[in-house]
Length: 348
Image 1 (cartoon, one colour):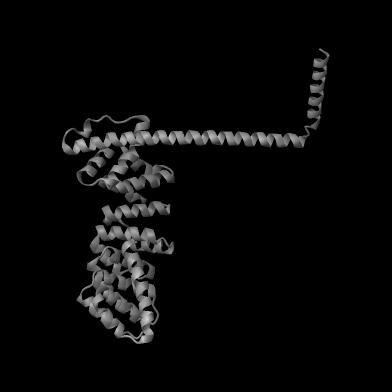
Image 2 (cartoon, rainbow, N blue to C red):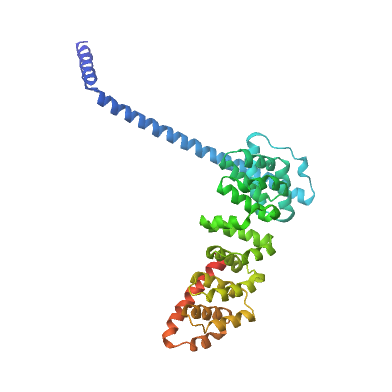
């Protein structure tokens, strides 16, 4: 009993010493440590729950993909009609939308048409039309992206309103859609390209001009002749080269001859003209290259000789023998650089 009593007294003494050592500074450090432990605990639990939720969502979407791909196939084959399928509810309705968008992106022909009709029937396109007008930016741009994927004419009146939206990304996403589907409603196309040029948004400009080339070919060729700014013209020429827009080659030849008459010109722009002409060369282009191979400016000569070699590799000996020994090394280097540029334009 005495030892127990002594033990209690020792513990009481230690406890009193501990309390006396708890200054305000020590209490603060203890509080910080406990707070850090709680933060780590909460972060760990949140990460684990988030990972678990992502796995559950992925599993549900995989199941939806299997179910709805079968519905699309059965509808195409006439086995059953998607009209008879009940509309999903709750979380399933939310998860199905990106699944259908993936189908629309990956399918073609009647299967794609069926996927679009299902998307519309379930009300997703109507929700997208609402979102681009009233939701916050993130939802607006996501909805506009889905509208671009679906490419349904019913979206035109809604997208048309966005041409003068205060947000840059919304304006030009709308422009991409309208160039494909409602060219007559496009306002100030050249001014909009100039805006992209000022902002140095050449990737966006390339997408817009590609859409113009594919869906409004005659307007593309007219717009090409009005592309005066070097960077804008460069993007137009890249589209001509990459997609072999042969109808534009007469203008490219004319533009090239005007370019080399200037006292100073952009060598990169000269190269882009030549790259366009090498992708779909004809007799007239060959004659032009031969003429430019004798040009007074060395850079024009080199690039013209490279271009001639691309379209007529059988003339290699003749081309090399036409230049002095001091120029052969430079011509070989110019050809390698030119071939690299050609590959980048054609293959990206």
